[in-house]
Image 1 (cartoon, rainbow, N blue to C red):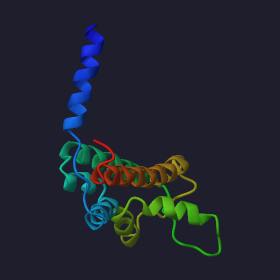
Image 2 (tube, helix red, strand yellow; image 1 turned 90 degrees about the vertical axis):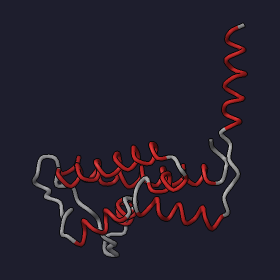
Image 3 (cartoon, rainbow, N blue to C red; image 1 turned 30 degrees about the horizontal axis):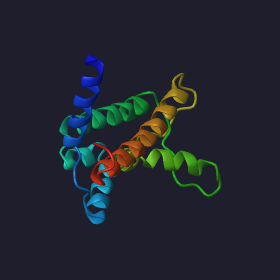
Image 4 (cartoon, rainbow, N blue to C red; image 1 turned 180 degrees about the horizontal axis):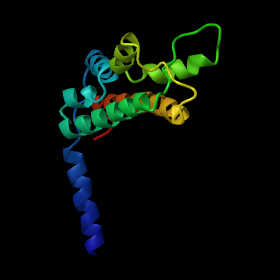
Length: 144
């Protein structure tokens, strides 16, 4: 009996968190900001804690990948399969472009943690894509 009361209480609480969908232009601006600066999309929506946690996760993972001498991939037409690694890397947003311009992420294949570092750099970009999709769903009112 207590369990059914808890379910009704949680359903009414989740209904109070529903928000009206934002315009598509505002949603795209939020998603663009969230891609360039990880977590910014959630901060702009008003989810401060979630945005800060997401930013910390992506940026710390990016820094660890660079510290482990991982490689940041460029757009190379000679190696067509490197396109997938490039897409994963640019998911980190402005951090990718800044690190590339400063000469970080060249990758040292003889370094023991090279593979781990490269994988960290891929995963942080892919994680940021998922974070942007989460911000999109929240902005469109699909997710509380």
